Every structure is written in C-alpha cells, then in structure tokens.
Length: 235
Image (cartoon, rainbow, N blue to C red; front, side):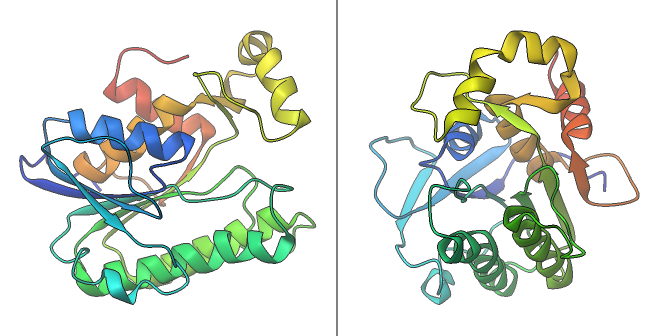
C-alpha cells in the first residue's frame, strides 16, 4: 500500500538491543518523518535522544501492561528474536511465536491503524510442514499476524544478515559466512543483506508505505530492491 510520508509518525521499536533492532532505532531517531520512537526493552538502553521514549517490559509473554504505551502509535518494527541453537527448542518457540503474537494483539487493540513490520526469516514455512523448527515457528507467527487485522503488515524474510560491525558470532555457520561475505555477496547477491540496510527498509516501509503489491511478504530480493528504491547504496 502506498502511503504518503507524514511528519508526525510515532513509531515503536521492539528488539532494540539486538543487531537489526539497534540499527532500526538509531535510524528512526534520525528519520525526519519520525516524531517519536518508543523502544520497548527488557533493560534500559544507555542512550538518550529527544525523540526517544524507553519503556522497560521484561515479560513479552504478557504485553497487557503495554496498552497505554502502545496507544496512539502509527507503526511498529518488531525485531525481537533468537538464534537457533542459542536457546532450547521450547524457548525458541516461545520467543519466535508467542512473543510477536502477544505483542501484536496489544498493539492492534491499542492502535488499530498502526503499520507492523515483522522480522521473519528466509525459509519461513506457513504450511507448518518444514522439518526445521525455525521455519515452522516463523511461519506460524506469520499466519497469526496476517489474521490480526493490521491495515499495513510487512513481513521481512531476509537470508544471511551481514552484521556490518564486528561482533561475537552466535555459531560456526555465522563465523564462516562473515569470513567469506565478500565472495558470497558477489556470487549470491540475493542471499545476503546488510543489517543496517534491512533495518532501514523495515523503518521506511512502516513510515512511508510501499508500492502496491500482491502480498505483504518481502523475500531477500525484495528487501534489496526496497532499499535501493529508498537509498542509493546497497551492498
């Protein structure tokens, strides 16, 4: 849906302590069309900004207490997640499925006109038939969000997310991909996306909307094209 940019956009960021969420928050704070950015965090961030409102909320299994903070918002960028293997399967399911569904429930009740940008992942399987738990869980979350009734829902399915800034990688696969990133990007450009580019796309689409399209799902190729349309550089 193509929505004109407004000068008074109020945006919510969930997952601002993470890689993509951190970039999304910083970009939102610098965005001229964003009036305020509310970061829903488990622990207070060590930053301050005139646009920033921090709301500490530790239990995303129950977001009822966020109803007031989420009232009157124009959009949300949801980047909260966990890496496969970093937590138990039960915890991965809770974080991947239950948390976004519960947050979306309260957001939609408090701000029914809000846009919602959701960080899913490449291979997400809405049919539930995948052998990979991550794919099944992301697909289940996508299905629930589609049924919530957001007027503008954007589901992002990035492939490999390049961290940009050095960090401690969560597993061997990520260490390997980071090491070979320049060659991997050249050979398979539509299988990679920079973390900062992904974050900008998620914020921009929540603020500006995007061109009419058949569905709300953006695969890695679509995300790169979106970044390219909003910004001159992509890598």
